[in-house]
Image (cartoon, rainbow, N blue to C red):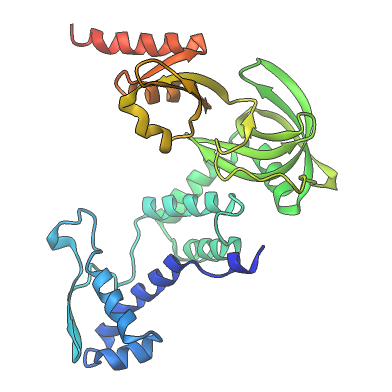
Length: 324
């Protein structure tokens, strides 16, 4: 890990300051800006920026009555409405369970967050949960631990943690076949409700995405993972990594959807008629891609594969039938 990656981001530094400002002035109502800046370890100019930024924050809804109210001048700061930022957060059982599951998913995603910090947060939350909250978490944990893919996921996480190679028996939905292969795991990614293992496939000699629920068997090999030094891991599911479960669609993008070329993982391959362009895009599930195409109101036309074009046409026809 580089020295730069160990440093907290600018956003995290700002968040830490903001979380301290309101509690400080609640406990030091007579402090002026000079004293407060010295106590908080910032400049007066930075403190003014932080106070102004806090007035743009508040409770969900973000109506005027939901925003933090702060009046200040050189002599002091008056907190009119703190949006309860200065009070301990009380979670219901289901809220605690949801937060705990999210933290565990974060811990299972290497490179997304500091694992030690996430594990400390999990430990504190588990220690704080009692009664119905603990029962809720236990029931969810039980449901998860009984799932058929739990053992596979554990093996994959173990290989990632120990930086070991894996042997997989994998089912490819697009080829309707099982294959055996050795891979060097890189990271876990989630997309559309599914978890994927990003790995260097030694058989294909390229980056691949393997959906965990389609791994029939996984075995940690007695050798270290060896990802080629010139390989750039994908930062997202569609960013540079091919997959046996990803299908490539050939689309005609109309002028009305030209903006989407900058915001979605299209690859322009040619020019069409009347200002349209031909582009390719990879997708994991047909249902998701059908919804994506239809969301552009006819500005996207599927050229390949034929099965996707038929599915889009059928969904469009079903929708129109509702108006007859």
